[in-house]
Length: 154
Image 1 (cartoon, rainbow, N blue to C red):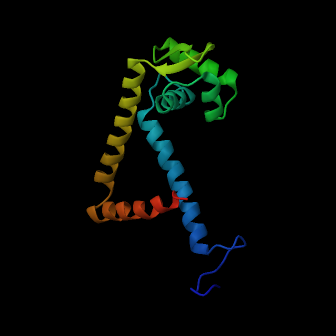
Image 2 (spheres, rainbow, N blue to C red):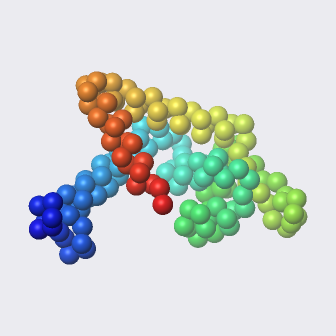
Image 3 (cartoon, rainbow, N blue to C red):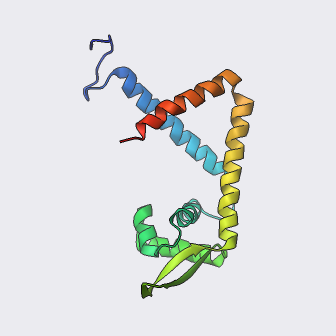
């Protein structure tokens, strides 16, 4: 036991800190999975949705840079991008700095798809909070988010 009366784990953190970390990881994982299920288009695979979102965040990027960011082999990213290209969601243009490389960007249809996905996810989550939580519970979540935000700071 430490000075506050909490037990410590072998890693030197209190039992409550270890449980909070475990519970948070599990809840976020389940929530992330549920949010993806809500908005995933039936015609795109999870890896295609992920790559489309990554292109949206990256702006113009090479296929190899996207593969490195996503942690997949360049060949896998090439196949994913080929499918997105067939759907008309991305376009490839020569890199102005190196004409041998191509930069991948979203088409208008790709931007609409990403925005629609974000909108669907946001609407589902807001609706879930409205239908499944009381006002006091929603306020508790808002307060907890301020605490969780502290964890994101260096």
